[in-house]
Length: 169
Image (cartoon, rainbow, N blue to C red):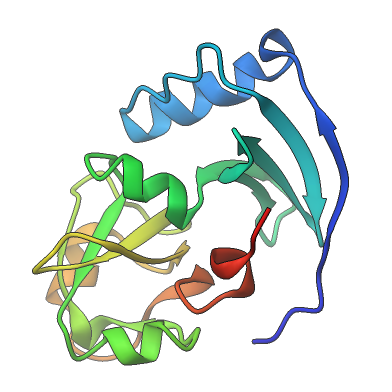
């Protein structure tokens, strides 16, 4: 999956304008973003809206197939908030595939947070180091992700090898 997207319409945003979006994200993932005193910007990145905190892409607003809007941390955001909810853990055999943007197959899934449901945005982490590898749309509930042995478990949206991950902002 290759993207020819670029960062466009980058502009500063007042905290009070973006507070509802950040509060929704904090509640969904059970975290505290602590953006007090930070320089917050919004930008367009293809069809996504990005939230930049001190020039680092921390959150992304995306749409699902039904055109519903969701806000989620980027992989850089998950580096700072490893305690965040909505996670799925994979074994080391899945990592090379995920780093190339492949969808996550359930054979590599070893654990998932119990609140994960079909259609949720989730973040994938390796089971040993708990480091973020990708984010994507879950195609099953948590229990089914862990117990199934065949099929696609997560449709990948953003991964470690993605150009957004490497982008200098």
